[in-house]
Length: 229
Image 1 (tube, rainbow, N blue to C red):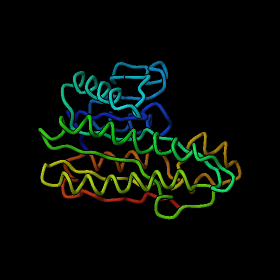
Image 2: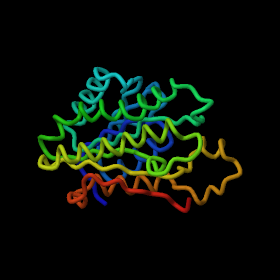
Image 3: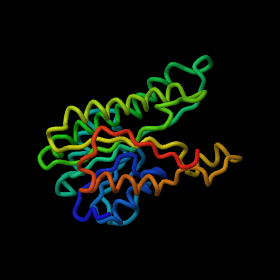
Image 4: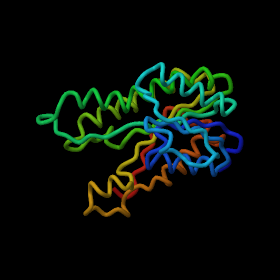
Protein backbone atom coordinates (compact mmCIF):
# COMPACT_ATOMS: atom_id res chain seq x y z
CA UNK A 1 0.00 0.00 0.00
CA UNK A 2 1.45 3.33 -1.09
CA UNK A 3 1.32 6.42 1.12
CA UNK A 4 3.91 8.31 -0.91
CA UNK A 5 3.82 12.01 -0.12
CA UNK A 6 1.16 11.70 2.59
CA UNK A 7 1.76 13.81 5.68
CA UNK A 8 0.80 11.91 8.82
CA UNK A 9 0.86 12.82 12.52
CA UNK A 10 1.02 9.98 15.03
CA UNK A 11 0.44 10.59 18.74
CA UNK A 12 1.77 8.27 21.41
CA UNK A 13 4.47 7.56 18.87
CA UNK A 14 7.28 6.63 21.25
CA UNK A 15 5.60 3.55 22.76
CA UNK A 16 5.70 0.00 21.41
CA UNK A 17 2.63 0.35 19.20
CA UNK A 18 3.32 3.95 18.22
CA UNK A 19 6.91 3.17 17.21
CA UNK A 20 5.81 0.22 15.08
CA UNK A 21 3.08 2.24 13.38
CA UNK A 22 5.45 5.14 12.74
CA UNK A 23 8.00 2.83 11.12
CA UNK A 24 5.47 1.02 8.91
CA UNK A 25 3.73 4.24 7.83
CA UNK A 26 7.11 5.78 7.00
CA UNK A 27 8.12 2.68 5.06
CA UNK A 28 4.90 3.02 3.03
CA UNK A 29 6.19 6.39 1.83
CA UNK A 30 4.53 8.89 4.17
CA UNK A 31 6.22 11.79 5.89
CA UNK A 32 5.64 11.25 9.61
CA UNK A 33 5.55 13.49 12.67
CA UNK A 34 5.83 11.66 16.00
CA UNK A 35 4.25 13.29 19.07
CA UNK A 36 4.46 11.95 22.61
CA UNK A 37 4.25 12.91 26.27
CA UNK A 38 7.73 11.44 26.80
CA UNK A 39 10.88 13.44 26.20
CA UNK A 40 11.94 13.80 22.56
CA UNK A 41 15.13 11.85 23.32
CA UNK A 42 12.96 8.71 23.62
CA UNK A 43 11.60 9.15 20.11
CA UNK A 44 13.05 8.05 16.75
CA UNK A 45 16.72 8.87 16.56
CA UNK A 46 17.01 9.45 12.81
CA UNK A 47 16.06 12.41 10.67
CA UNK A 48 13.34 10.55 8.74
CA UNK A 49 10.79 11.82 11.26
CA UNK A 50 9.60 15.06 12.79
CA UNK A 51 9.89 14.39 16.53
CA UNK A 52 7.98 16.42 19.13
CA UNK A 53 8.23 15.29 22.75
CA UNK A 54 7.05 16.53 26.12
CA UNK A 55 3.48 17.20 24.91
CA UNK A 56 0.50 16.89 27.25
CA UNK A 57 -2.26 16.25 24.73
CA UNK A 58 -4.79 16.36 27.55
CA UNK A 59 -4.31 20.14 27.46
CA UNK A 60 -5.99 21.81 24.46
CA UNK A 61 -3.36 24.52 24.04
CA UNK A 62 -0.48 22.03 24.13
CA UNK A 63 -2.23 19.81 21.60
CA UNK A 64 -2.89 22.74 19.28
CA UNK A 65 0.73 23.88 19.45
CA UNK A 66 2.12 20.40 18.80
CA UNK A 67 -0.23 19.62 15.90
CA UNK A 68 0.40 23.05 14.41
CA UNK A 69 4.18 22.61 14.64
CA UNK A 70 3.97 19.13 13.13
CA UNK A 71 1.83 20.30 10.21
CA UNK A 72 4.15 23.23 9.57
CA UNK A 73 7.23 21.01 9.50
CA UNK A 74 5.54 18.40 7.33
CA UNK A 75 4.19 21.01 4.95
CA UNK A 76 0.56 20.09 5.54
CA UNK A 77 -1.52 17.31 7.06
CA UNK A 78 -3.30 14.34 5.45
CA UNK A 79 -3.90 12.10 8.45
CA UNK A 80 -3.91 11.85 12.23
CA UNK A 81 -3.42 8.59 14.11
CA UNK A 82 -4.43 8.87 17.78
CA UNK A 83 -2.45 6.22 19.65
CA UNK A 84 -1.68 8.21 22.81
CA UNK A 85 -3.26 6.54 25.83
CA UNK A 86 -2.77 4.26 28.79
CA UNK A 87 -4.07 1.29 30.75
CA UNK A 88 -4.93 0.64 34.39
CA UNK A 89 -6.27 -2.58 35.88
CA UNK A 90 -8.32 -2.33 39.05
CA UNK A 91 -11.70 -3.48 40.24
CA UNK A 92 -14.52 -1.02 40.77
CA UNK A 93 -14.98 -2.04 44.41
CA UNK A 94 -11.34 -1.72 45.43
CA UNK A 95 -10.14 0.88 42.96
CA UNK A 96 -9.87 4.66 43.06
CA UNK A 97 -12.28 7.03 41.35
CA UNK A 98 -9.22 9.03 40.29
CA UNK A 99 -8.38 6.18 37.92
CA UNK A 100 -11.56 6.88 35.99
CA UNK A 101 -10.55 10.52 35.56
CA UNK A 102 -7.03 9.50 34.55
CA UNK A 103 -8.25 6.99 31.96
CA UNK A 104 -10.64 9.53 30.48
CA UNK A 105 -7.87 12.12 30.29
CA UNK A 106 -5.22 9.95 28.64
CA UNK A 107 -7.50 7.95 26.35
CA UNK A 108 -10.31 10.35 25.39
CA UNK A 109 -9.22 13.94 25.98
CA UNK A 110 -5.92 13.38 24.17
CA UNK A 111 -7.75 12.13 21.08
CA UNK A 112 -10.35 14.91 21.19
CA UNK A 113 -7.76 17.65 21.61
CA UNK A 114 -5.45 16.34 18.90
CA UNK A 115 -8.35 15.85 16.50
CA UNK A 116 -9.81 19.31 17.11
CA UNK A 117 -6.39 20.81 16.42
CA UNK A 118 -5.96 18.77 13.23
CA UNK A 119 -9.41 19.21 11.68
CA UNK A 120 -8.97 22.69 10.16
CA UNK A 121 -5.93 21.36 8.30
CA UNK A 122 -7.56 18.10 7.26
CA UNK A 123 -10.79 19.68 6.02
CA UNK A 124 -9.01 21.66 3.33
CA UNK A 125 -7.96 18.51 1.45
CA UNK A 126 -9.96 15.63 2.86
CA UNK A 127 -8.01 13.46 5.23
CA UNK A 128 -8.03 10.65 7.72
CA UNK A 129 -8.53 10.39 11.48
CA UNK A 130 -7.75 7.00 13.00
CA UNK A 131 -8.32 6.21 16.66
CA UNK A 132 -7.01 3.29 18.69
CA UNK A 133 -9.87 1.86 20.72
CA UNK A 134 -9.94 -1.56 22.35
CA UNK A 135 -11.84 -4.80 22.19
CA UNK A 136 -12.68 -4.18 25.84
CA UNK A 137 -14.95 -1.35 24.73
CA UNK A 138 -17.31 -4.02 23.38
CA UNK A 139 -16.94 -6.59 26.17
CA UNK A 140 -15.04 -5.57 29.29
CA UNK A 141 -13.35 -8.05 31.59
CA UNK A 142 -12.83 -7.92 35.33
CA UNK A 143 -10.67 -5.00 36.43
CA UNK A 144 -11.14 -3.19 33.14
CA UNK A 145 -14.03 -0.88 34.08
CA UNK A 146 -12.25 2.47 33.88
CA UNK A 147 -10.13 1.50 30.88
CA UNK A 148 -13.01 -0.04 28.93
CA UNK A 149 -15.28 2.92 29.68
CA UNK A 150 -12.68 5.31 28.28
CA UNK A 151 -12.21 3.18 25.16
CA UNK A 152 -15.98 3.07 24.72
CA UNK A 153 -15.69 6.85 24.68
CA UNK A 154 -13.23 6.54 21.79
CA UNK A 155 -15.73 4.36 19.92
CA UNK A 156 -18.52 6.89 20.31
CA UNK A 157 -16.20 9.78 19.48
CA UNK A 158 -15.34 7.96 16.26
CA UNK A 159 -18.96 7.36 15.30
CA UNK A 160 -20.13 10.88 16.15
CA UNK A 161 -17.23 12.60 14.39
CA UNK A 162 -17.65 10.43 11.29
CA UNK A 163 -21.26 11.60 11.04
CA UNK A 164 -20.22 15.19 11.64
CA UNK A 165 -17.60 15.08 8.89
CA UNK A 166 -19.11 12.73 6.31
CA UNK A 167 -19.72 15.53 3.80
CA UNK A 168 -16.28 17.08 4.29
CA UNK A 169 -14.21 14.30 2.71
CA UNK A 170 -12.60 13.46 6.08
CA UNK A 171 -13.03 9.86 7.22
CA UNK A 172 -12.92 8.80 10.87
CA UNK A 173 -12.40 5.19 11.93
CA UNK A 174 -11.27 3.25 14.99
CA UNK A 175 -9.32 0.03 15.41
CA UNK A 176 -10.24 -2.21 18.34
CA UNK A 177 -7.30 -4.47 19.22
CA UNK A 178 -7.40 -7.31 21.70
CA UNK A 179 -4.14 -7.92 23.62
CA UNK A 180 -1.18 -6.39 21.79
CA UNK A 181 2.13 -8.26 21.85
CA UNK A 182 4.33 -5.70 23.61
CA UNK A 183 7.18 -6.12 26.11
CA UNK A 184 5.00 -4.64 28.87
CA UNK A 185 2.15 -7.06 28.21
CA UNK A 186 4.55 -10.00 28.11
CA UNK A 187 6.00 -8.95 31.46
CA UNK A 188 2.53 -8.55 32.97
CA UNK A 189 1.28 -11.91 31.63
CA UNK A 190 4.39 -14.13 31.46
CA UNK A 191 2.42 -17.39 31.20
CA UNK A 192 0.25 -16.29 28.27
CA UNK A 193 0.51 -17.67 24.74
CA UNK A 194 2.11 -14.68 23.09
CA UNK A 195 1.66 -16.04 19.58
CA UNK A 196 -2.11 -15.64 19.96
CA UNK A 197 -1.81 -11.90 20.51
CA UNK A 198 -1.96 -9.18 17.86
CA UNK A 199 1.43 -7.93 16.69
CA UNK A 200 1.97 -4.16 16.54
CA UNK A 201 3.01 -4.51 12.91
CA UNK A 202 -0.33 -6.17 12.06
CA UNK A 203 -2.15 -3.19 13.50
CA UNK A 204 0.21 -0.90 11.58
CA UNK A 205 -0.62 -2.65 8.30
CA UNK A 206 -4.33 -2.02 8.89
CA UNK A 207 -3.61 1.61 9.70
CA UNK A 208 -1.68 2.01 6.44
CA UNK A 209 -4.71 0.75 4.51
CA UNK A 210 -7.06 3.12 6.36
CA UNK A 211 -4.73 6.04 5.65
CA UNK A 212 -4.56 5.18 1.96
CA UNK A 213 -6.72 6.28 -0.95
CA UNK A 214 -8.18 2.74 -1.05
CA UNK A 215 -10.25 3.41 2.08
CA UNK A 216 -12.27 6.45 1.00
CA UNK A 217 -15.61 4.59 1.37
CA UNK A 218 -14.95 3.57 4.98
CA UNK A 219 -15.94 5.94 7.79
CA UNK A 220 -17.45 5.51 11.23
CA UNK A 221 -16.16 1.93 11.38
CA UNK A 222 -15.07 0.19 14.59
CA UNK A 223 -12.75 -2.50 13.28
CA UNK A 224 -11.76 -5.39 15.58
CA UNK A 225 -8.29 -6.87 15.20
CA UNK A 226 -8.15 -9.75 17.63
CA UNK A 227 -5.52 -12.24 16.56
CA UNK A 228 -6.50 -15.52 18.20
CA UNK A 229 -7.49 -14.10 21.59
